[in-house]
Image 1 (cartoon, rainbow, N blue to C red):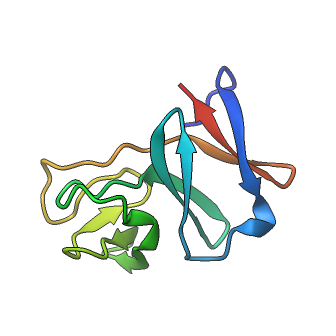
Image 2: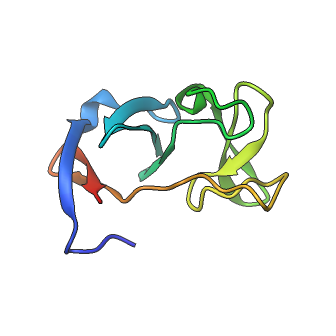
Length: 111
């Protein structure tokens, strides 16, 4: 949920995002993968927890069991873009970040 108390950092222009393709950004020294799927925006950690590689912005977006998911390009685990949960291992969860489109600017909440 997006809080009105968040401080926001501009990341890119909305027009810089292509549907279903990831963009990697740096927020407070953390690598973040950003996706636009239909009209929704998602921001998750860009680090694949199974390989420790910063590759998730290059993952493949799809739909599994009604959830918008990202398949890691390394070992192909699926992560729910909304919650960060791994569908194959419920003990693994990616960090998610509040994200918004503010009049054409894509912004991430600063912790």
